[in-house]
Structures are given as structure tokens and as C-alpha cells.
Length: 289
Image (tube, rainbow, N blue to C red):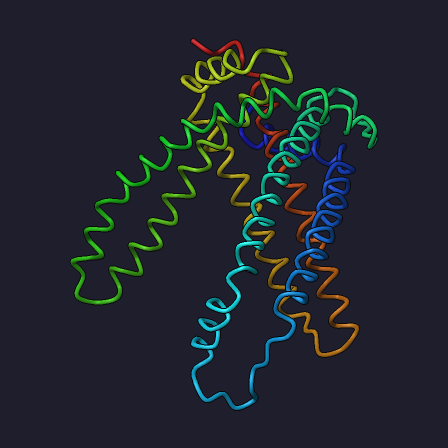
């Protein structure tokens, strides 16, 4: 099977399960609303009494310093809330990923919300453990990035014009993206093996490493090719949002609608990546060396 066939089958598998993107979008919207309400209340209660003059006698940055110095209790309570919210978000996203992989890998294309939640519960603990096991690989990612970007850092520090600094900055960003896609592919493949072959987490990581030893370059190339298509479509959607305008109620509504469509598209793209990885794994799992 050629590369375009893998990508096409992955996209078709995601399209048949498009409801998953809608479910995820609704959950994320509810989560955002639940997070906005306490933050807004905290700000109003703690900082609502602040007064900023129309013509300030000192720079605005100094007023922010005053706010920080006189309202440190607010920032400590806000940091506590943020930490609690992030912890809850990690648990929730592990659950959502468990449900997403579970439904994407099922042979039945009919998706219901109850089955999605059931898969989230069924695979939650192994997905949480897979995230913890991934932490050492994440440390390797940062180490590789620092080593590979060191020549670029040296080049930019020795530059006498701004162009080497700009070029080095873009190359560092490209390097980070390429490295992250490789490590993300590894994590996805381990989770696919966890769900499809019902293996324990450590065994799934070992199987993923054996598979990638022989299939990494081709699968990574397909991943990047699909990613390029996602970036192009995302750019067009964001361009449409910027040109829609918000000076009128209709323009504002259209901008909000396009922004939500962009979020749904990115969630659908996540499905397409999983579909590509799964189809490629099924077709080549006998080729592990």
C-alpha cells in the first residue's frame, strides 16, 4: 500500500467517526466555561476595587508592580486554583484520550456518547500509566533538543546582524516540531498497542520500539505529510477568521463560528492522525524485525 492510501484510509476512518470531534468539542467548551466562571469571580472579588487613572502619572507597568505587591494573597490563591485546575485537566484529558483511541480503533464506525465514556473508563488507568512512563522519554526529548540546537545557539550569539538570529530562531522552532512529532508518534503507537492488543503498558512501549525500529522513517514521513496538510487547512481557516471582521454583529458571529469550526477541525485532524497510525500498524505489524 502506498503512502497516499494510508493517509486516505486514516482520513476516511476519522470521517466515519466524526461524532468524536463533536463530543470532544462540547466537552472542551463546557470545561472552558467552568474554568472561566471561578476565575472571573476571583478577579472581581480580589481586584475589582482597583482604580486605574485615565491619565496615569507613572507607566502602566509600574501600576502592575503595585498590584502584585499589594495583592499577593490574590496571586497565591490564583496559583492554587490554577494548579488544581491543571491537575484536573490532566486527568480529564487522559480520560478523553482513552475514549478517543478506544472509539477510533473499534471496527464499528457507529459512535455513541455512552460508548465513548465507557472506553474512557476502560482504558483510563493504562493511559494514565502510559503518560507517566512517557516522562523519561520526554526528558530525552528536551536533552536531544538542547544538544541539536546548541550549534544554532552558538551561531546566533556570534551574529553581528539580526538575520542569523532570526534564521536560528526559526530553525530551532522547526527542530522542536520535528522532534516532538517523532516522540508523539511513539506515544500514540504505544497507546494503539495498549488498546488493540490489550497489552500492559511496559510491554506496549517495548512493542512500539520494536515496530518503529523497522518502520519509523516511512510512518514518520506520512505523519509529517498529513501534518503539512493540516497546517495548510488551519492557515486557511485562520485567514478566513482574520478577514471576516467583527465590526458588525454579523461579522462577529461569523468570526466566532469560524473559530469554533477551526477547533472542531483540529480535533478531527487528531482523529486522522490516529487513523493513519492505526492503519499503518495493522498493515505492517508483521514487519518488526
